[in-house]
Image (cartoon, rainbow, N blue to C red):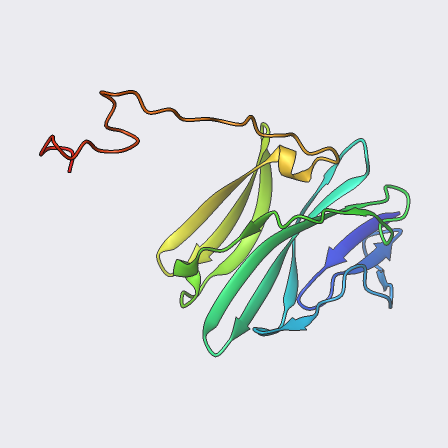
Length: 168
């Protein structure tokens, strides 16, 4: 059996035995909701088979009065029943920068290369790409090492020395 995930509002699943006849499940896998930006549209990014299940990455498209905001989110779906969510990835994978708020941007899709997932965005300026490290999608989050910066007396990188005119 084949499955097709559809967006444009809610995320829904369609099933087919032969690629010609498709049956859409009435209940959405993920429902769109409304917030400050109005009704959110959910768009399919891509799916990737993992040991845990089907990693489903999707876009949340928010817009109101020519103000645009985008998010990348993800869930893990059951391999045997893709309408069942095994795990929602609680953390937001990515959020669009403030500079995009008035731009006409459309999410195109997501690809995997090495240990990174790349999202593609079409705009009037061309195509933007954003890299998302794979650890963002893992069940056990990796801890970033704590970095402590100490300023050495003659190191102007962390804090300029005001007595040196070229650093102030």
